[in-house]
Each structure stands twice: as structure tokens, then as C-alpha cells.
Length: 264
Figure (cartoon, rainbow, N blue to C red):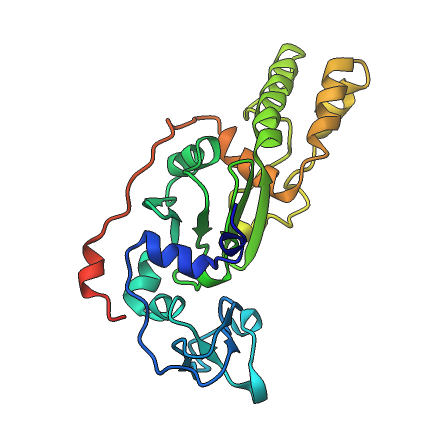
């Protein structure tokens, strides 16, 4: 992989995949760092001085102020500060070939099991409207996936995740055979698909009845021990892949009519 590819920002990749033109702005007299994607831009590149409205912009902590608090946006980030583009990029995965919706559980199941060709950027909003693209990480491999969920960035070890799905389903199968009340295809108290619930004590915690049975069941004890090692990203993924009523994974191309009306 070329060194230049490793430095690609999420904004640049998403702009190419969505076929958005670069934002227009005066040329910078000297090199600068974009306050949004935080990439270094050479002298001569477009730079827009930006003053967000304090009452409508809430992502201050994600910005990198320049000299004397000056805020600057690069040509790749500028399109994603346009309201139509902002609204259209709340839940999707983008690579150089195009973009796909991540708005439904079935779309996310497709993405987690068969992600598109890297590099790609994946983001899911957890509010009505959020800045996601420029603060997201680029995934350069199908084996280690970054997902921006609202203001949180999750990393998912996909091979480990796929194994964990089988562990969770096997644990539920054993629990059912042992007479436990099994309503989910996993042994956790709860698995959440929403960022605001990921810190809840029940999320990712084992049910007490499974733990009690595990003391006399070596296979179940081993499965629970493995599942308790999962990270936040893998647990979030399991919430989609171990639903009681699993939808068939499906990928839907993002609708494109909004591009004609974007003021970028």
C-alpha cells in the first residue's frame, strides 16, 4: 500500500465515493492544518476561514484550532458542512466505488459480514443530524473495521467477531438444553445497538443463570470466558448479528438525487 494512501482522510475518500466536487475557497498562502479532518494542507491549497454559529454547532471538541484559535476547512471537508450533504451522510459506508446505506439492521449485518472493498469509511448517526464524515477513521482492511457512531469511534476485529457470533449462539443452545429461558441468541444480559447504551452496566454482562450453569459445564464455561474478552466494537456488532429475528443481510446503494441540489 502506498504511503500516500495511508494519509488519506475520511473526507477525501468520502468525497470521491460520493462524487462531490471539492469545496471552493481562496488559496492558502502557507501550509495549514484543517480544523476538521486534521490533515496538513500544502501552501496553495484551498482554505476557508470558518466561524460556526455557537448555538447550532456542538462538535467543538472534535475540531483542531489553528494559530490564535483560527478555524480553517480544507476543500475535502467543505462539502460535508453543506446542509443537504450533512443530512444525506448520517448512516452509510463509502469507498471509492460508491456508497451504501447503513440505516437498517439488515444493512449493518451485510456490512459486518461482507464489507466493501477497502479503503472505506463507515458512519452511523445516533441523533437527528451530526457531523460524522470528517471525524471518522478510514478502514484499510476488511479484518479491522472502524465505525463512527455519533461521537464514538469503534474498532471491530472482524475474524474475532465472526467467531464470537458462533460462540454466542452455541452458548444459547446449551442454555436452552439446560432448561434456561432463552430469548436471545446470546448469553448476555443485554447487547445494545445504540451508542448511548454502550456504557450501561447490563450491556455486555453475562446473565447470572448462565454463569451458575457454567460451573458444572466445561464447554459453556469456556464459551463464556471467550465472550467476556470481547471489546466494545465486537459487542456492538454482536447486537446486530445475534438478534432473535435475524433479517437477511442486504446492501442498498445510497439515493443520489440530493446531489443535484447540494450547494457545495
